[in-house]
Image (cartoon, rainbow, N blue to C red; front, side, top):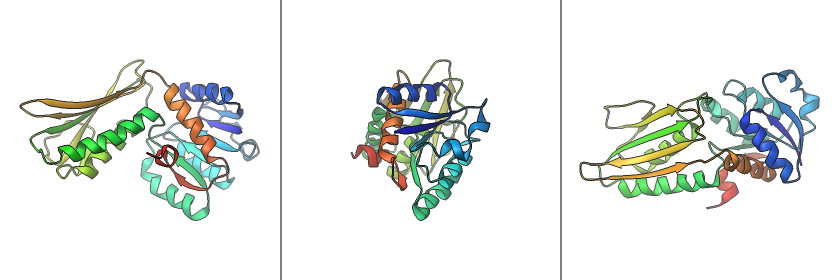
Length: 238
């Protein structure tokens, strides 16, 4: 399979290694220094594109792939206010689009555990729900897309939370997400339930980028020749 990498930072380089190990060919690598190479002619060489660029460039990269009917796998966050528009375009116009806030198999298992725990704790309002996410200092958005997905899972399954905020909050219906940026931290997410009596928490800690990169490549393999909107549930099938 021929892959275009839209975003060739540390994550893009890890994706390249795994893609080549799995027998794929990288036909295009785009970063801030060679954005002019993202031409129709170059992009059309790819069977699928993998997008890990920046919040500022992700949407335009998606649009370019849609124009050329190149299925795209997106891991960039920070542009999600346009997600509904992109989903509608993919579904109505037959474009191939795969999105996940996190491509790690372990994180997606964590998402399911988080939703189940929220259901269990819904009847115990004495527990205060809090979240913390820690990433490397190069991460450009906060909270992380993974943290937002976790928050949405809690809000969907807990009556006492209706929205999340990226700060401390005194409002009972607001779910706090505390974002920290520390050098060389691939990603740690913690959800805690605190009461005067005890604390329950669940945590996922990424040791490196390999899990994210492998998931993105597997998603690209899944998307070859496909149209429509897909996510990790379509890939993993819990």
